[in-house]
Amino acid sequence: SKIKQVEFVKSSSRPRECPVHQLPEFAFLGRSNVGKSSLINSLLRKKQLALTSKKPGKTQLINHFLVNKSWYIVDLPGYGFANAPEAARMDWSSFTKGYFLNRQTLVSVLLLIDGSVPPQKIDLDCANWLGRNNIPMTFVFTKCDKGKPAKGKRPDENVRNFQELLRDSYKQQPPWIMTSSATGLGRDELLLHMSQLRNY
Ligand code: GDP
Image (cartoon, rainbow, N blue to C red; front, side, top):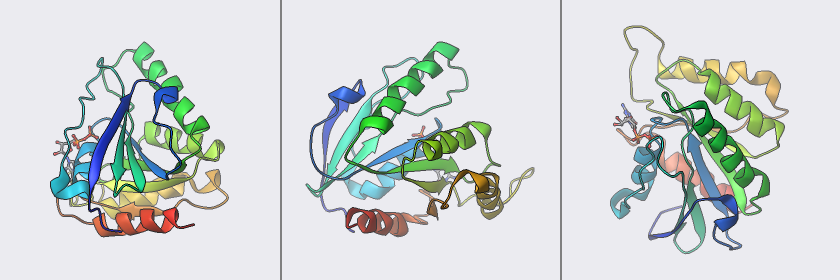
């Protein structure tokens, strides 16, 4: 499951511009600021690649990275920008939903959820939407290095509460992994998980 080589392939501004290939791909999705760039960079380790800006208002892009010439990491635009106008949010949904519903090579969506905060409605909505549309997904909790904040709960409680709130949404609970880009927690587990999914 080691990452030996990675190359940036393409930034696409709409789903139908995505590269055409037959290789398995994993899409990284999450709220803006969830720690997506940090996690992708931690997976790629020293093979860091400049990820394009994901600031609100900037062009939203789907970035494809080819790993070991055999599978893809796909960096999707973040959702839920705190100050984005409603129009920009709607734009995100039609844009990215098109990708999920039509991408034949998608093995699993890695839905990133901040494990240092209680369950957020926007993440629950996203998980519910993916579930309703039968899109395979994995819950990847980020920032699980953070201890108990002054107000709030520990990561393991946040993780359990998130899953509890979705319990009736799935026939089968999606697999889940706790990670931290700061400590490397869950990195190997996530790589192993993706390699297992590729071999099915
Ligand atoms: P993105 O917008 O989802 O790409 O998020 P970034 O990777 O840019 O991270 C957003 C913020 O969260 C930054 O301030 C990071 O330093 C912080 N962050 C990211 N990953 C972790 C983590 O594993 N632990 C902690 N404590 N903070 C993190």
